[in-house]
Length: 302
Ligand SMILES: NC(=O)c1ccc[n+]([C@@H]2O[C@H](COP(=O)([O-])OP(=O)(O)OC[C@H]3O[C@@H](n4cnc5c(N)ncnc54)[C@H](OP(=O)(O)O)[C@@H]3O)[C@@H](O)[C@H]2O)c1
Image (cartoon, rainbow, N blue to C red):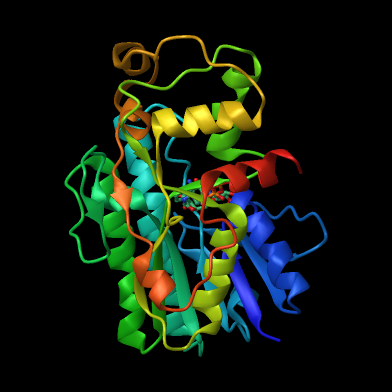
């Protein structure tokens, strides 16, 4: 049994991760800005701006899974929100690094979330691999700074991983609910050109990847966390409608409408390239849901 501390463990991925690790027999602690706990897991408080982490959180801690961060798509990208998105990831990682260093916590691994946005909001035929550089746009820069901060754990001799996560498909919350809603109401359609790729991943596979990262001592560095078979926005919409047994009849939502509604954030849904899952597969990871249709059937039938 190991003690695993999950920052942002109260979030949609963190909740499921905590339950999974608990079922595997591990002791799970959550690191949260609020002290509230649902009683299942011990919740430790931290305050990033005040450089505070409950010292008990790191006591006998074997692994940190770092998921905390202000939602990228949740609010308009004002200058203040952009700062919060970056600082909630970078300063939180720095804080964990400083605490681990100060207390000489003998961590076995530090596993940080990152995002495929590392490669930029672009639609192209290129298949991005972990060897590609980060992009110069807002999300690319955010992921670069986030990962750069995580990499500092290597200086402490701690095995460090960065999982560049794609669009996580889960039953509740996240992108799938938002995509399914208009289709269920009979008004769904692809977005923009529909040609942009959606590098998706089923949440069970994502949790499996984090667990693989935690338990494989030979794994370190960056790994893309996406399914091997991506889909364009048009294909995704068509398959989702089929699984929901609904018809699509409307034309694509024009890009200008989404830009008017979402501002700069529209790039998150209007752009997208393919991302390779080769590296994690070569490390021995086996996907439960490599293809989209069975992944959607599983989630929407739950
Ligand atoms: N979901 C996806 O499709 C997806 C895709 C790519 C990457 N990711 C990354 O994976 C991580 C987890 O995603 P998720 O979907 O589970 O996110 P989520 O549901 O929004 O949860 C993130 C957690 O981070 C904490 N948090 C929020 N704002 C914060 C702030 N300003 N400062 C510090 N902590 C803050 C919150 O915990 P407390 O309120 O308890 O402090 C929250 O529960 C995120 O970093 C996200 O960027 C997710």
